[in-house]
Image 1 (cartoon, rainbow, N blue to C red):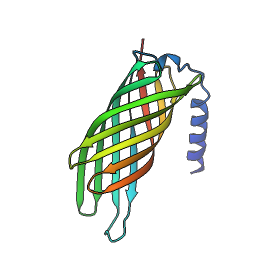
Image 2 (cartoon, helix red, strand yellow):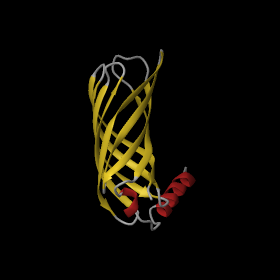
Image 3 (cartoon, rainbow, N blue to C red):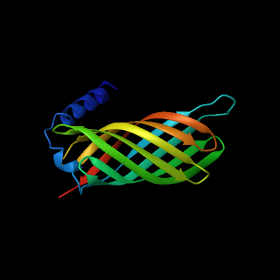
Length: 169
């Protein structure tokens, strides 16, 4: 366990100390392709057993002006519970604005709306940072607030990690 912690600390230190330029990644005309992952477990009162969720959310965005991108996000959700498993797909628009950048870190705020089967609808708001590890690949961390309207109404606060690839001239 100590070796794993040391490995993570050293790896993050190397990644976050490399000097790269964020400027061209978020200019008008650039594209970004990426996605995040979530895995979590849930237990509820009066429900037998835990419920496990795996969520992947790939997306494509286009910078229509400097620092502002619009695009689409898909969402794949797999839910496993005591008596079975179900999968669901959702799709919707997303936008993000990069409000701060230095040599290799870009912070952003964004929002989106997903619609899918089973009357699922979700609006979300996010704050995050992209950390360039090469001139066009970034590690992404996001804090997301989601307002769900599915079989039950709920609000969720989550932390996601992912990878973002920027395509530019």
